[in-house]
Length: 174
Image 1 (tube, rainbow, N blue to C red):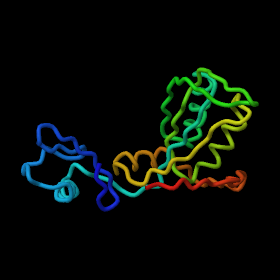
Image 2: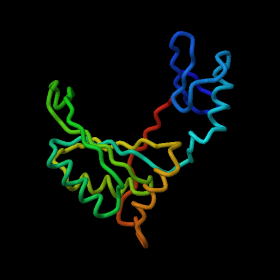
Image 3: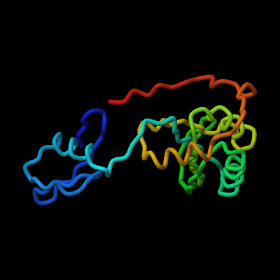
């Protein structure tokens, strides 16, 4: 992996021919990673914008709950999309190590909707302490981000009824 100008690029080396994840096969086999990234940034294959888009990771008990809450959030225009995955979990609960089947939901939305979504999930889910985690999407496909913003715009919305997050965790990254 090479980190250049804040962008992460993954390069695959197959028989000394450099391929990259965002562009085409390098025409110049001697081209180094920095030159390849510059070439990619100039090409039309990278179409990114800084965004206010976030993913919200939520874990719930079953597929029925995941779909019910997701559809309600969609109908309220608080999210643009939900991805629902069955998962196996191992966790500590009340001094015991537990194992179980759960459902991981990735909710795609704008950062301004986090508190409302968190409030809704807490009041409509089966878990006493649900995981509700925000992941900021720093860059994204501009067409996708525009679609997401359009799908989650709510005219004349006021968030005064939703409390601010009690705790904000800053996870350091390298």
